[in-house]
Amino acid sequence: MSLLAIAQIGAPVLRERAREVTREELATPEFQQFIDDLIATMRDANGAGLAAIQVYNPVRVCAIEVGDNPRYPYKPKIPLTVLVNPVLTPLSAERFDNYEGCLSVPDLRGVVSRFAELHVAAWDRHGNAIDHEVRGITAGTFAHEVDHLDATLFIDRVTDPRTLCTWKEFTRHQETGFRGRVEQIVARWGS
Image (cartoon, rainbow, N blue to C red):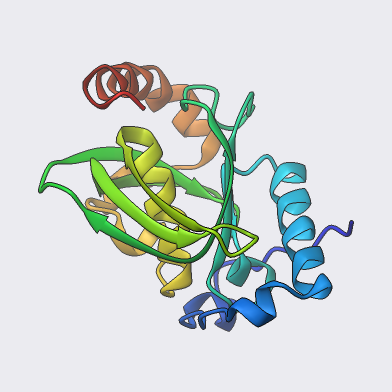
């Protein structure tokens, strides 16, 4: 496996819409190796997710995983999930405020309004159908990664620019309060 370079804000690739992947392309050893490299890069960077476009490959693929992540100790666990050609559909109009950061926007966090319940339709890395629902903080994580595939960064969705802060200042001034909100979100939506 190889670690891939992560595009940073300002790289033109982050503002491209990723193209769909065909089943034939997905089945190739080269594409499967790319998925392995994407996962390894996400884990190495302590990301909760990573979209292919963030590693300069504008295809509709992203990996999501939350375990014991030092960047997001308050996030509910998400088993490794690879989404190919994902489509997210809100299940209700309910939303929540989520303090987000991004590997492509280093050392910056801000509040984004996310749908609380989403239907996920995609393929897994082997072309099998994924058809399930995600809620709460997990829904926010899925939406963040799929946004990348549509050329959208979290800073485009920040509801109030006054919430933008560095990671250090988030930890110092916002994290305790946000952890309390995460607990409320998890209690309400389960993840």
